[in-house]
Amino acid sequence: MPWILTRLIIRELIGPWLFGVVLFTVLLLAGTYLFRLTNLFVSGIDIQTVLELSAMYMPALIVKTLPMAVLLASLLAFMRLSNDSEVVAAVAAGASLFTIMRPVAFFGLVVSGITFVFGEYVVPPATYRATELQLEVSQSLKQAKAGSIYQPLYVKDEFRGSLMARETNFGTSEMYDVTGVWFDEKNQPEMWFHAEKLYYSPGKEWRMQNVRVWRTTPEGDTVTTFIGDTRPLPGTTFDFTPKDFLTRNLDSPDALSMTDLADQLERLKKNPRMNQDKIREWEVGYWLKIAIPLTALVFGLVGAPVAIRNSRQSMGVGFSMSILIIFLYYTAQQYMMIMAKRAVIDPAIAAFAPVVLGLAAAFVLFWNKNR
Picture (cartoon, rainbow, N blue to C red):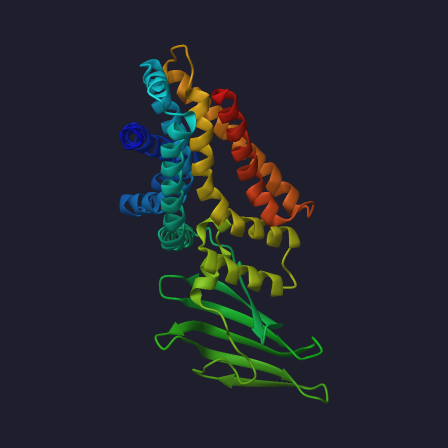
């Protein structure tokens, strides 16, 4: 009996879940990016680039819609089972409500695992490619801002300098019209340099072309030197890669893997110019890499007891309830993120509080139905 019931419930969940993934992904894509993509096409960007950009946007959206679809699937599946009195029949045959909920919990955990793996291994490369395309499109439309590329420089985890580039080609990992400054141990400028070109060589190192260097001597004089093609100047080090520039242009930490996000957080904390609110926001994002996949488990366990009723219900009720629950859940999540940015609560607590509250709500609903 338990195995037959488990197979029945999971079969009921899979169809609505796949439908929900497609539905929510299309809705989010249309609501978030449709105007931007249409504007690019009207501006003269070729259709192939627009379609590729659309495809690269989708993985980051799918990570959010996979758990959302579990809620819709749970509501629709158990509404159908309740309307056909199959839940009543299962209970009459000796199955407890706990037994009925186990397949839902199992399905939610499986989707949580899929969401986590998808977010770690599919979303980052797609997002980096989307960022490359966005910057290339901006440059082709002459929307790229001069001086918008900034990179701090470190020596043994200590901030020692910075550089800025007027123009960057992310496809070839080249920067043009690069200006930099290097500080001594007392944080006083000791060297300035300007290079016509800074590029990342196949040997995984930076090289500069047509470099002009200004150094200050102990006597306070300035010495100017012109160098042709060179590695980073003696006494300096460039401990960043082209990937760091793309990361800096990402709008959300959701687009990074946990490893990349941890590395980026470490760099942000070393940067004296970085806003602390930004750091706390990305710390919340780090913990959300685990909390968001767990949303699938929460939504599944909340949706099932809500949908089990004695009276018949239309499928429209399921759609309405799913939208309401998703709205309430993500409103609570955004509120927690704001509290974390203001340093009111810890970032980890902010990320997992909605999950804990959701599981508590599921327990209360389950307990009421089981009485």
